[in-house]
Length: 317
Image (cartoon, rainbow, N blue to C red; front, side, top):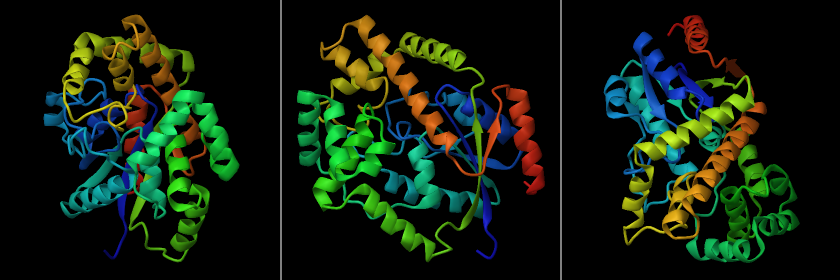
């Protein structure tokens, strides 16, 4: 590829209206959507992931949704491989890829590449889960801080998935996540062709966190009205799924699963789901604060559409 093709990346916290904006952009320019969402990859997980409805997908098809079963473990490295393949297909069709989602780790993996990390190991994860169950996730955070203080500084004590992965990497390889990332960055610096595309990053930013929190609560209650509990029950009734799988650990699914298990009352499930979603949004916004070359968009739909279109004009899309 003689010239680097352009790829538009639309980021933002959950419930910020990314999909609506992306669909509007697709109607106005030769763009094709590629989903960047670690939960929407799973089939049968539609309501709780905020997956676009069928009529929206007919209007604006999304790549990388419904591509694997909830029993599978989908990783950031697999996303990068899949996403690069889909980008190439879209570019070769004469259209411009529009990456849309809120899984910031996936965007980072695409932009920066990934160190050669050990694969997930269920036995090691189970040991870490036992520590968390007996002593709490802050105890796991303290253990991580002993071996990888830099990673512990980046990862919040109440972020189970990232804590588990960081400690798992050390237990499996004897090297820390920080060491492996440092090695990967050094290797990438020697390869200026590691990312063969020009990535242009946009993010919808909330003007008021309180309004975002209200929107999150309203959206979750709407998901319940649409049948979220029944959706999770269909997963719960399967013999090959359990609460330790990444799919079931997704926000909302984890809490409804606990309700079906009898570990949470219904009202407690609703409250914990809303709180967990707010915490997710906070982590997403933290990622965005440190993102290089980010073009911020307002929550107002018309202004956001115009801002992106004006920018696309400058790069002839």
